[in-house]
Image (cartoon, rainbow, N blue to C red; front, side, top):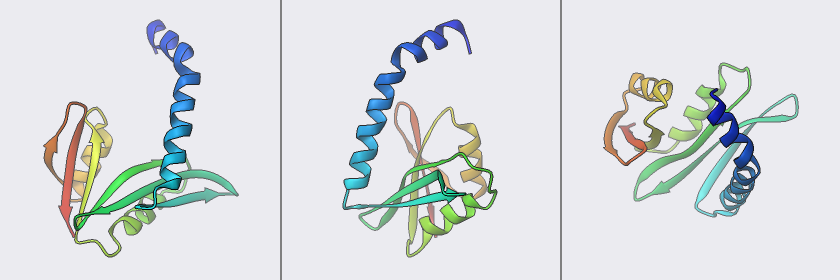
Length: 122
């Protein structure tokens, strides 16, 4: 990290934590969302959240910090169960996730300033 990014992180860390706290509270209270949590040794290591909107299953969030290489498969099964079309919004600079979804036959169908919208029929 550069000195500038270190300074930005240190000066904004508490505000980002508050932002994420509020965002996750909203997620957990959203009746239209379904959240699956992944625990390892009793510790939360990841979660993913989906919503069904107009016949499309949308992956709203997916985060994982554990060591189980099969967790991505569990997330995938959770995401596609009962869906006919799935969509995900991915940061344009997240090349790893974009490449991964392309290998899963997702296409980029739209983009906004910071994200690609990727979609696939099941």
